[in-house]
Image 1 (cartoon, rainbow, N blue to C red):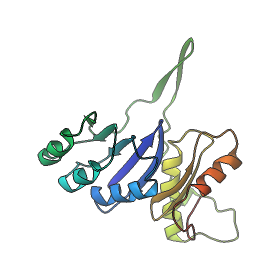
Image 2 (cartoon, rainbow, N blue to C red):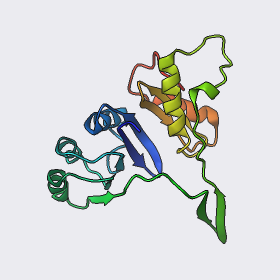
Image 3 (cartoon, helix red, strand yellow):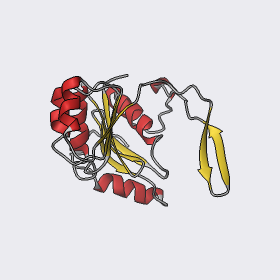
Image 4 (cartoon, helix red, strand yellow):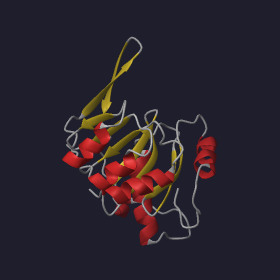
Length: 190
């Protein structure tokens, strides 16, 4: 429900950030992984405004998805060659099932619409997490459920610090997430 920006590369997020507004979310998302975002897809849950469009046009992107674009933002972004702008209204998924094609058929499975709440977390460590850590854990949980398994999300201040996705080993996923971090991980959650 907060303003969010997601950078996507090869069907996995490479940066996710919540912000005070859409511009703030984009800047945090970009800084989470300024390398992988290049040539990727950016998705927003709010209208793209002029200030954000001016930043978006500075790098090469393939697609920008948002519920709407201001007229001035459209003018700025439409001048970029080979950039696709998609207007996608934000609607909760009503379908109970998702369908994926597989070789020789289809896979039908229930949509993961489970809404985790901090109150349902079971702390199994001696150290009890602070409210800030719990908030970051909930944010990381929402991100990791959309990553290819094995997946690890390291987060701090509701911004991804490192992502380890699609690994055959959970250990490798952790190593990738920690090694890719561009920030001081003190106070981060995994």
